[in-house]
Image (cartoon, rainbow, N blue to C red; front, side):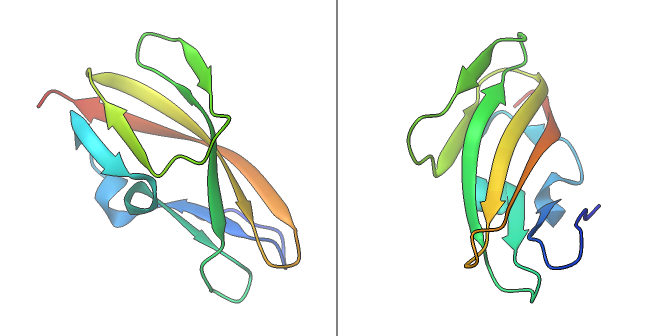
Length: 99
């Protein structure tokens, strides 16, 4: 599941997201892991969310939690940046089942 070029940060879905999530609120860091090339935590930023109804919402502030209020497929656009300011942007799809 991990994608990276040598020396760049790595974005991956966490163990919790390998199966479909249920409706509710989650910490972003519980859903997605962000590591630098050495395996240390890297800065994770949510850039936008495509909700189950297809609507995109850009994020212009620091988001720590995300609420899934309906079942469907959500797409999170995230950026991971390491201490050397190398960045990776990735879209991650998350299935959400009913609560």
